[in-house]
Image 1 (cartoon, one colour):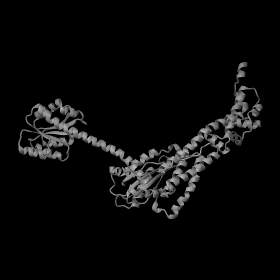
Image 2 (spheres, one colour):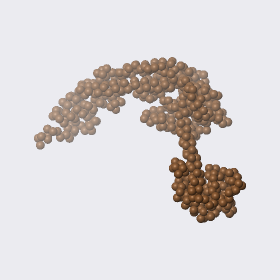
Image 3 (cartoon, rainbow, N blue to C red):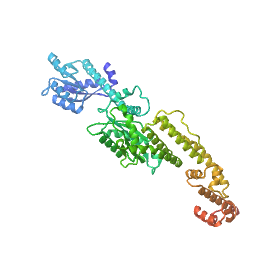
Image 4 (cartoon, rainbow, N blue to C red):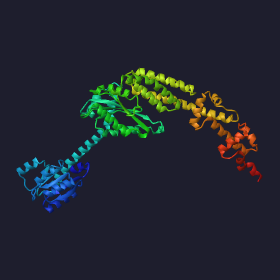
Amino acid sequence: MYYIEAAEGACRMIRMLIVDDEPIERIALQRIIEEGSPDVEVVGQASNGREAIEAAERLQPDLITMDIKMPGINGLQAIEKIRETNKAVKFIVVTAFDTFEFAQQAIKLGVYDYMLKPSRLSVVLETIGRVANEITMIQQELASRSLEQVRLQKMTPLVEADIVEQLLFDYVQSASLAELIDLIGFPSGRDGFVMTLQFSHDMAEPSHLRDYDDVYLQLSELLLDVTNPIWLGKMSGNQVPAIVFVDGEFSYRAQAISVAKKWIQALDMKRGLRLFIGIGGLCKDVRDMRKSYHEALLASMDNTLSARYCLYENLTRDDIQAIGVRTVEMEKSVLEEIRRGNLEAAGDQIAKMIDVFEGAQQGVVMSQQRIFEVLIVVTRMLQEMGMDVHTPYFPYTTTSYMQLKAESRLLIQNLVQVGEVVETDLLQTMKLYIQKHAHEELSLERIAATVDRNPFYVSKLFKEHFGMNYIDFLTEYRIETAKQLMQETDKSLKEITFEVGYNDPNYFSRVFKKLVGHSPTDYRKMLIRPTNKKHM
């Protein structure tokens, strides 16, 4: 009973091979197993030692009952040979010789148990059940270890990302950092450097292709193709930091360039994204990696280089000074992207500004103030364009550059979302105004004045929401009104021309034909007005 209960929790059926030179003994034992041990499967029989060796290699049994006295290769010799290729298999020897010498040999070969010939049915089942139970427990333990290994493999990237975050960013390193590092283990060589992988959008592609999560997954899979040990950080905006450890006999520079080229070749221009890699200097201690990270940020500022990567050590002093000056150009880019309605691109530009501040080791608080000043300028520009937006503010002092990036993107999104709610009301108001005054002289300035907005902003709004400018919208409405008048009234075409807002019947006729495909006269002839139907 004990054996049966234990076997019910087994990972799989116990595979058993019967070895005996007497056919009747083999048949009898197999029948006993089939009737009394339902969780043990007899997968084969062998009549001598040589057959046993071949069958064990072919069938890979978990348990072998081995007769000792057989012609040719005897049982003990077969056990020794099988052990060379299968360390896990368990043996029960079957013998008529109960001697001390035999027991010594059996113990030396690691035989688990033995049965004397002949044995009672209960003894056979008890002995096989005891060994099978041991095999089951070993299988369960191996399965548990395998599951833990899978869990550890899945957890390792998360642990690595947490370690990178603590080492590179402004968080106070937790007391568990050393434990996390011990959990995944240090690479054999501790010298390393930081890479920043930055993805910029190909503006020729639609913005909905910007799937950074998918690219991050591809990046994680590519680690298997790189010989250097790498700890990959989390993606923040359009940037992924990575700590790369030097490995092998090649120089830091050679390894850095090799890794960069592999990633660029595999990921560049995926899903409309362009990859550029900044590479920081070599550090001897993993806790000094923030310095290499700052260098990598500075090295990634000029992402127009054809090589698609840049080492910090290649930058001259003039290059570094020029990078600081570029923040002014970035501010202009932010304003331009906002004006165009490219919110993600504006967020990317602000993130790059923050990277410059971090690379130059400007304090987080000072960086937050600088970004706030940029957002104030953005707000004023939107207000000048006629959008009703609120003054942005950071709800609390930011404690890290990563947090500053996230908060800045959120503020930009909120600014424009406020504007979008207002835009809906504005469009409805302007649409009704145009319909009401379509017969009058309507200029863009007059329409904008009705909603107290900038004419440029009104023109942009029409284009984005209606796919046409205001004059095309006005023209279409006038022509639709003219078509309705032709069908519902007996007014002359000249009267209709003036009523819908045109002063020249010939010009009206040309516009009508362009939009409808027929002249006003032909169109009217094609109509069957309700008044005509009544006279029929």
